[in-house]
Figure (cartoon, rainbow, N blue to C red):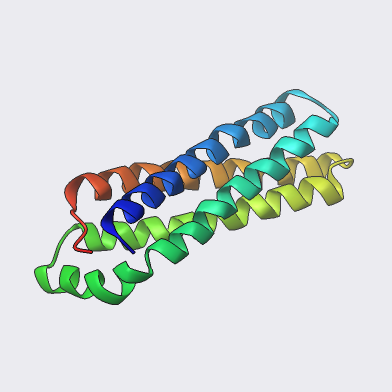
Length: 148
């Protein structure tokens, strides 16, 4: 992969996640304010979960060179970016899994008040994990230069 293509895909990766987090706010706010689940709340939850899964898959693909070639060098230099990057990756998995779980809970149990509360908790947790992931990702991107 060329450095230019990597830079482009890295930015797409981050922007998709940002769009997913922005869209995830709609079902969260809707579940806080409404007693039912309108179709658009379910639709935005579905789309937000997809928009959080897409950058996860893209990141898995574009960071394969990082895992194969750069990570060892970061270990050797004891860069503070290494644990931050690894933390970001783990939080991204949590955000995606929580968003999907919240969306499925909303779809399967959204008619029940307990199901809506559970979906809200899962979606809000996904959003919080996603925001922390994004902040860490911006910091890591700012303090590191990629060697590939």
